[in-house]
Image 1: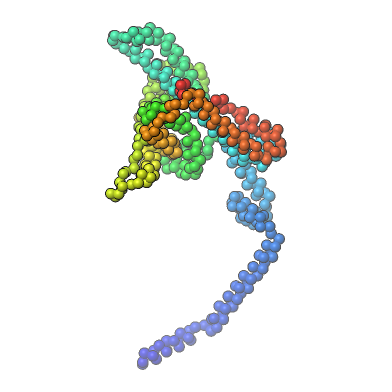
Image 2: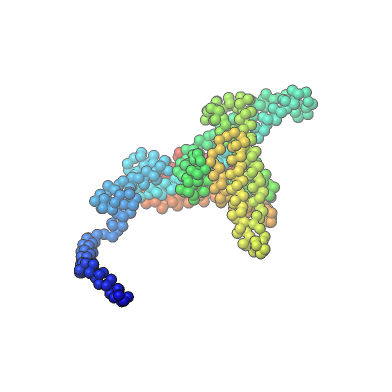
Length: 479
């Protein structure tokens, strides 16, 4: 049999096996599908004639916000809208307790302020940031004075030990020894007051609503959980941590501009150590069961020499480590860490400075985190992942100010040294006035301010009356 006959036979067999009119059946299916599509198009277009595109868009948005199907929203729009609004108001007012209390006090308040909830909440948050900054300055001043008092108590102890060992005392030391009981009493009482100020500032700060993601990060038990919490609101957390660290940042930058690189390093190290020392005393006293919000209990604890010796020892260890790390990183801040050459090619000054920014951040972040981690470990305190991570992310953008100040002090005149205390006070006052003016502009922009000035004034009073420091400026001499 020839090759052509074989192929002819195979083709003929395939034709006999094929079902008749197969093409006709497919054509019929396609025609039915086209008819069905045409019917759907007509029906949808007829239905759209009575639809409002804006309403449809809002229903789609409600469907996404409430997590329910679109057709459920269409049938129950008012119910779904009320549920979404309630959830949004709950979330909004949870971070604005003062406004929440004002709204709960009178149903008219909720009605007149309905269009201004978000503005009122924003104003309260801005006011809280001013309060947080003021309490931070209060803590800083009390910490510096408290560290001085603790040093005085330590000097009294050393003089007594020196006298007990039979060593010769200088006239100054003999004067201390002769009045040791009175000096110790005064220093202990003053130290108790400073510790009380720090504890009270911490209590006030704890009452200010904290960003949920930041609270979750602070309470995280692992570094992975702390990082996940940070990623939920990185910009907000960085903003809050930057505002919290402003007093320390002001001390470091101010010391640099007034005293050059050495002044900046000393101011940064001493302010960090003092702040850590006194807050560490408060934390250790609380860990040992002392009620730091009770003045009598606090004074009794400070008079307990054995208790305070242990408390000061723990606090001093962490304070020394944190202060040393912060002073070291401040010293590095004025250096250019980027290499001069890469792959044998000289880098342009602009490129080198651009590369220096991430390099400086890495060093500053590592120093802050290292001080917190090693300080907690060496003093026997719990290592809190959230606190370590806060030291990393809290360096941005503060490290930019440190770097700029150190570079300016190395390469330029100390213009800030020419400023008088009065001019520095005036500059701080202007900054506060500007902040308050911005709050005033936001109040004036509210719908409620036009409809009911009386209710607007009542709302603002409810917002600011919970408290806050009367003065947020502290002269450098007092620090």
